[in-house]
Structures are given as structure tokens and as C-alpha cells.
Image 1 (tube, one colour):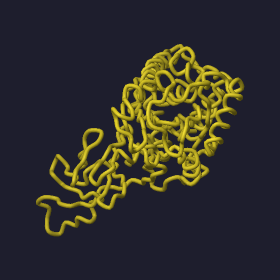
Image 2 (cartoon, rainbow, N blue to C red):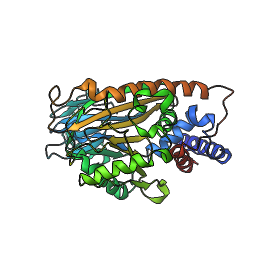
Image 3 (cartoon, one colour):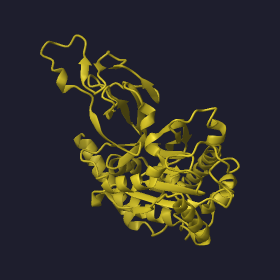
Image 4 (cartoon, helix red, strand yellow):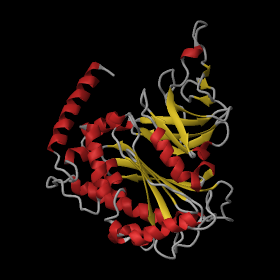
Length: 407
């Protein structure tokens, strides 16, 4: 980082800290935090270069040479399966003159070759060949830059930090809650990326509450009891837990919402019921894929997790859905949705993509529309932070977490 860049970052940090000090409690954020380049750059430094990020599912790179990309603003990370079957992560930057190496969202290669000057890299990231370099050139010093990578129940996490936060608590929570669903042996059935003209925080806030579900998501609200306040669905939740118990399953919740000062990654896992007679998140509540993991029947429930800062994963008895909100610019976000099914399920036989993806396609399309409208309103000169409703407790908690991280 240059002296100018350091000075700019310090100035931005001081401005953000002043905004945070003036932020009213349990209110939406100051306009600048939703649309200014300074706040966006600060978010990248304080959050996305410090915290673990969900990159995808391990089945997206199943065989040696398979790769997929995780892109966050200007950073591009290659997730690559080596000949030793290990997953590794590398910065998608050639060590010659900095060109991007891998293009597209995923692919396969026996050797990674930079398209600019043809420097090539082995699947373990070491430099294989660099044409016409002098005899004294030391190839061992010019391998791809490594990125920290961990796999938990098939979920691939990366950290761009020099010293990453501990994943111990998150690992325990994810393993306990998603192990029964067989996420580690699941496979990606479909991936879809939506380009949203809105700040990433507005997208995350929207996903953290269901206050908007009844007016915005009639399809979701017919199936999921979460569209009502938690106090009104306690009996439904208790019946769901009883069904899980009867199946011999224990799926614990976990609340480890902590700031980076703790040294830990932040994770929040909770469960909620579907309405009576609804078995899964499908067009009519009927099964959409083979039962996952240890499930021998449907428990009529959903297990949902927020992995801060901007990733979510949910599980039904017969499929899973991953959500990744990746910042692109101050006012644009890539929203990737990944559908998981049992590893041995066959498309067209055991599941059909239109039924499997229907609910979260229509829900995501609606979320894109309402979040973009939210951004347009926030951009108005007349916008002022407004109070969150009591039925938005997870948004209130996350906003406090966010302010603690950037303040």
C-alpha cells in the first residue's frame, strides 16, 4: 500500500468513525454508509479482507484440475482441486505482470496458463514454466499467492487476512447443524448469479428479516411460518423439533455473533417450522429431491445460518440453498444462489431443476427488485435513517455488529 493510499484509508476511517458515533440505535444506517466510495473501501478493508468468506461448495471442484472463482469487488480468488485431491485457494493474479489467469466462473485445466505471456502454474500453485526468463531466474519464488482455505461440511471458506480469525466455534456449529443434512457429501445442482443495483448491506439486511415476507413474498409466506412473529409460531417450532427428535436427529441452534476483536468468526444458526402439511420449500410444499444425509423422513423444518459478514445457508430435509452477497461497487452487488442436493441424485430422475429452484428463484427475483428500490430511496436527498421494527431483531443485531467492525 502506498503512502497516499495509507493516508486516504486513515482519513476514510476517521470519517466513518464519526458517522458511527452519530448513528441512532436500532435505526437504518447513514446514507453515506450505503452509497459512498469511502464507506465501500472501508467495508472492504475492515470486513472482506478480515473475515472468512463463503466461497462455495467443494463439489464445484470435484476432480483434479477443476476450479471455480470467488470474486469480491476487485479481488478474484481461484479455488482449485490439486492432483493430491486437496482444495487450495490462490489469488487470480499472474506473478509476471499481474494479469488475470482464470476467466469465467469455473473450468478445468491440467495446468493453469496465463493468457498474457503464457507463464504456467502447477495445480499446487507452483510456477511450472516462464518462457525466456534468464538462467538465474528462481521459479520457486514466483508461485501463485496462497489464500487461506478451510472446508466445513463441504462448505468452502476463504480468508484474505494475513492471520485469519479462528473458525473453531463456527466449525462446531456448522458441523452439528448441517452434518445431519449430509452437506459434506452433497453436490451442486445449480448455481445462478443475480446482479443487484444496490449496496451489499441493503441486500444482507433484507435477508435478515421476514417483516417484508408477507407483502413481497407470497410464495414463501404460504410455506414458511417465519413470515409471522416468532412468538406466534412457538407451537409450530416445538412440533418441528419433536419430529426431528422422532427421526433420531439433533440439530442444535448456535448464537456466536461476535466481532473480530474476539478473534473468532461470527455465526448464527437457528431453526424454524414450515406450515402444517408442508414438507419442503417447493412449488406446492411437496418433495423436490431425495432426502438428504441422515433424514429418513421430512421434519417440516428449516435450518438457517448467517455467516457474517454476507453469507447464508439454509437446509430443508431434501435440499440446501447457499446465498452469497458479494460487493462489487458502492451501489452494486453480486448475489449468488447455489442449490445443493444429495450427492448421488440424478437430474431429470431424482429431481427437476424447475421444481428444485422455483421457490428461491421467485423469491430472489423479488428481493432484487425491492432491494434496488430500497437503494433508490436511500440515495434521495430526503432520506434519513428510520427505526427498525421489533420484528426485525436480527437486523438490529447485525447493524450493531457492523458498526462495531467499521467504527
